[in-house]
Image (cartoon, rainbow, N blue to C red; front, top):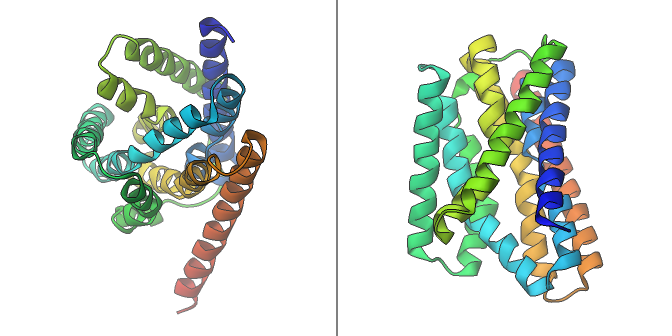
Length: 265
């Protein structure tokens, strides 16, 4: 694929995911929309397409680099969720991006072994959810009013942000470019619309849902890292997708049982 084709494909996927997450929010609530946005619905297909053009060893390195950025992503989500209870969205965004960059650059400087990076990535969603603000549980579940104009605006802003990230990364040093490309586009765009209209608890619920979706995201990339040296590209990718779906389902089911047990006390 040409560079232009890649860019257009990624922009279409970003717009599609933001649109789908917003639709889920409208039907089921902020937490459900965040969960949908946190799943590897963009990264998974793009990784599969990379396997068509690149050697499996190179794709494995990309997957490992993505996992190494996972604690930084969780720092972003947690800082944004707490800041949203007190500050306006521009201030929240600046603080959260600062936390993301600081954590990411620290991880790059430490140059952790692959096994350590893998363990940290797998643990980060659970650790992030432990320190999410309690307001994340206060947002009422259920349909959220989102008109068609806002839905289109979300998708347009997501495309503009994604284009800026991808084009800007071409002019940065490798470490900064990697951090920029790993930034959660949906995690940047959705809170900017949610906080002004629906408030801090709704934004915290959205970001906690995003963190839950990261369980499937992390499992997908961990499975890719483990499978690619041992399996052909297609079985490795299909097995990783299946692992992500199973992990996301199991985590959601476990969380549902915990919530039901708390309500029953």
